[in-house]
Length: 256
Ligand SMILES: Nc1ncnc2c1ncn2[C@@H]1O[C@H](COP(=O)(O)OP(=O)(O)OP(=O)(O)O)[C@@H](O)[C@H]1O
Ligand SMILES: [Mg+2]
Image 1 (cartoon, helix red, strand yellow):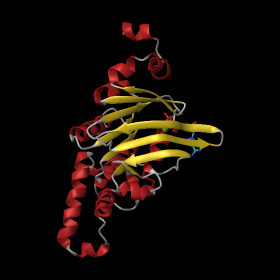
Image 2: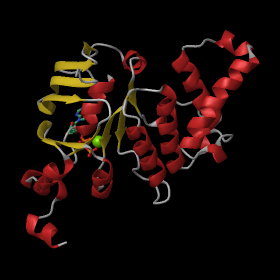
Image 3: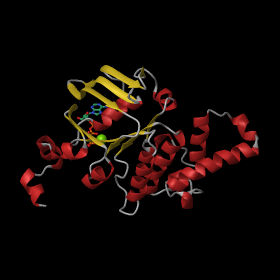
Image 4: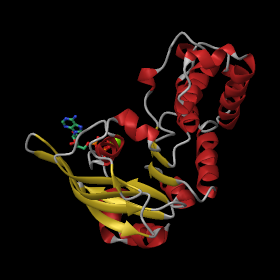
């Protein structure tokens, strides 16, 4: 089966530092891959290369077998590469609902004339509402986006990602900074996306309980290199993972 996403020899150097170093890795629909590794391992940089925020020094990125590594980030988004971003390209004075509605509209490639038809606008708003429902943001739908507390802003990032209807989902520490009540909303949503076997999910996550609950596969980055790749039990048991990632000696974990 052609991978939905594949990197070949993907490499980026910043000055003398190789942040992502010859990573060759294939991902398939219906698979949730957790990317782990210590701080500075290159996880976010790998995502930035795939989504097009950074241009590789070397290597290729293939979506369904086609090279996309020279396309702009927005062209990659239209091809189905979905990345949740910090909310820098949001309209802060528009409401949460309007922001998601605009994302739905952009996904459809619909111009302003389309909105002269009230029924069409209603349809877009309904779709936007369904994404707010999924991310538990309905209660704040009518607040300006800039007024949201941190946890809700992170949820809005995910709502905007849903509005893009990508087939590759990339989540970089999606629950970072969320409260214990908020995090499960996002994790349940990721679990739901995983149930739709047509989607490919890449997740950077540090919390081991989350990794164990969601991962179909774990890849480990260390100093920019892919040092392990396999099923969760096998990868978690590897000495290199215990040492560089879990930071606990093997006998200590066995005792726990
Ligand atoms: N734009 C950049 N210019 C220079 N160096 C960069 C740039 N982006 C990342 N780096 C460097 O690349 C390395 C990998 O960083 P990256 O943010 O990808 O790590 P990470 O695995 O996501 O870490 P964390 O777990 O802390 O989020 C780091 O040494 C970082 O300083
Ligand atoms: Mg990071």
